[in-house]
Image (cartoon, rainbow, N blue to C red; front, side, top):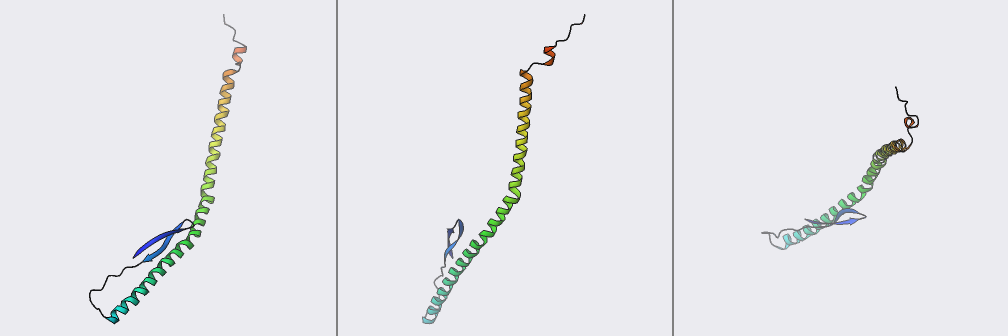
Length: 121
């Protein structure tokens, strides 16, 4: 059996299937020939039906899988990413505050510079 695949709305699924039957070695005659043809036609229809049924199952299962992925994103990933963003934002703000404080201390007058200690004698 050979199966080809197609894509519908981004979902890969079986598109068609074909079967191959070996030529018989014996049992040649009008009745076996008609029987083989009828069997071949029934088998071909069964193969096409199986491919179509599989495609239907695959396409019908996709919305459920998408719903599960959406819930995982909404309930797990987004809160984790928001928490990580809040932590990084807080760390950046703390670093900026510390840098501003260091800059102020480096450029501003020091209290000890304004009133130098008196020498001891």
